[in-house]
Length: 116
Length: 112
Image (cartoon, rainbow over all chains, first blue to last red):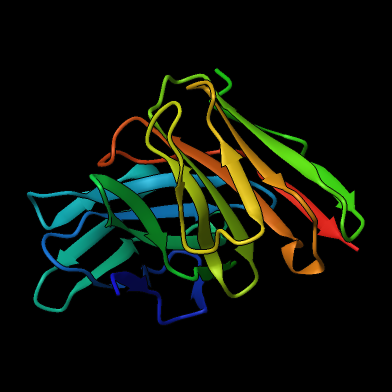
C-alpha cells in the first residue's frame, strides 16, 4: 500500500536548537510529498511540498524539508526551533486512487515540543 | 477571505440520530475532502470529490454519505450515529491534484 510513516510520536527539542521531524514514504513512481502543521484546536496548515526539482524544499515559517530518494525519506527541518513551533506535524503523500483521481494520505503525526 | 468553513463547530448526538456536516469553500476549488482525526490515528479520508456532482469513497467510508450538488459545498451525512463516530471531522479543498489542500477549522462530534 502507498503510504507515509512518521516513526516518532513525539519530538522534544530545546529552543534555539535545530529540529528534525522524520517522514518516510512508500509509493510507486515519483512521490508528491507534503508537510502540514496543526496547532491546538485548529485545522491543518500547509508548510511545504515536494513535486519535483531540488531535493531541498523551503517552506513557511523557516521550515525546510529534504527529499532523499535512496532513503525514501522526506524529513522536516528547521535550523533554530522556537517555542511557537510546538504543534502537531503531519507528513502526507499524494496517492493515485483510480479513474484519474488522487487523494492525500497522511501519516499519524508527530507532536513537537520546543522547550524554553 | 473565508477559505474553508465548516458548520457546526461542535455537536453532541445520541446514538441513532442523524446529522449533516456542511463544508463550504470560496476558492473555486475542484477537489474537496472529508477526513476524521482520532488520537494516534492521524487523519483518515472518509470521502472525497473531484468535481461538482462526483463523489468517491476514501479509506473509512462506512456509516457516512456525501453529496456535492454545488461546487462550493460538500456535505457529510451520518444516517445513524454510533459512538465509534465520535471524532474531529475536517473538510479540505484543493484546486488541483498536485496543489496543497486548505483545511477548515474542524467539527468536534460526540456521539453518546
